[in-house]
Amino acid sequence: MSSVTALNGATSNGIINVADAGLMGMITLRGDLASAGMAKAVKAATGSPMPAMRQITTGKSGAAAWMSSDELLLMVDYADADAVVAKISKSLGAAHHLAVNVSDARAVFNLPGDQIRDVLAKGSPADMSNDAFPIGEVRRTRIGQLAVAFWFTDAQNAKLVCFRSVGGHIMRWLENASEIGSEVGFH
Image (tube, rainbow, N blue to C red; front, side, top):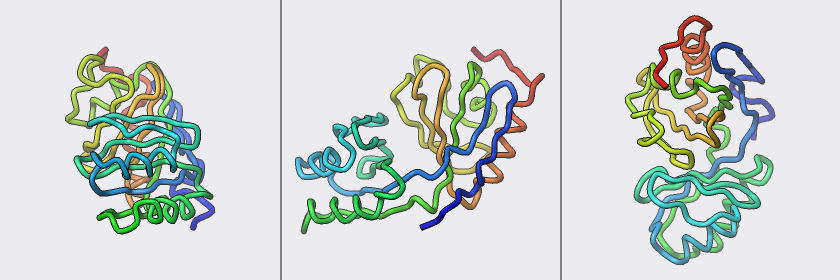
């Protein structure tokens, strides 16, 4: 496991702030999301209930984000990710599933500011309106043609996850899109 992030603590201030979120434990969990065993494993791993389609749920020890009809992204403490994978695999036993620690393959950004939707709308095809994309939903989409997922934790804070290999490019894209004077007045 890594001791530094892809962005090494990078930050940028503009119409929104862009910051490396630091090391985060991330686990790709695939399987039958409707099964009771899967719900039990997610609850044990994160303390959160099984998320509904396009939702993120949070619990005492982490969060679970719906990524597709058979895939979740679990977020836990970075140091605990391998142990959580082992716990999930033991819990699910012979049930068809995949649990993989992908922490070091991802970059995570914190995006605070009151113009987050404007900035993200510049590069994502997702409808960024409050009605179409409420707090608590996850969007797996693209920014500048690169795969990302993002969600709002409240009206003025969002998280964005991308592949580590493109973290620097996404950082530069976000810096450019949030330059002072580039406001579009979407919201």
